[in-house]
Image (tube, rainbow, N blue to C red; front, top):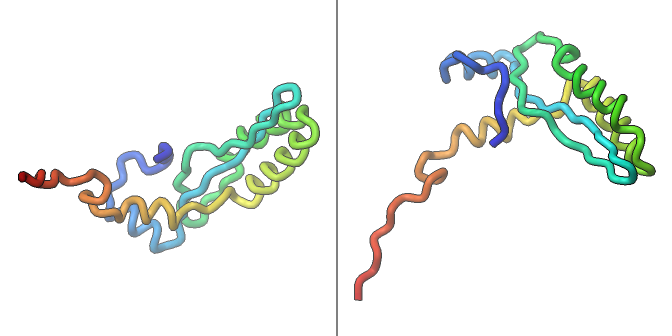
Length: 119
């Protein structure tokens, strides 16, 4: 799982309280072009509290795209514009996926020791 920024020092109860009041988890996109290759990537996951603006968090990724994304033809301009639109809309909401990964039972995350059949 990707690193989650903005939840440092929060308990599970605090996190659930924030989520119930409109907080969300988002990722921002950026594009990088190298000659004819273009890559569209996602940032770490950011925790955004209810009412909190995302422009400050998305700005570095938007600037990376503006500087390094345009140069690959044809995908550079396409991925750059897609990244900018995504970032200006507040990022891609991945709250459901993150919460689902938190709610996985520990046994599902790590396989339990199973008895070895003898005989």
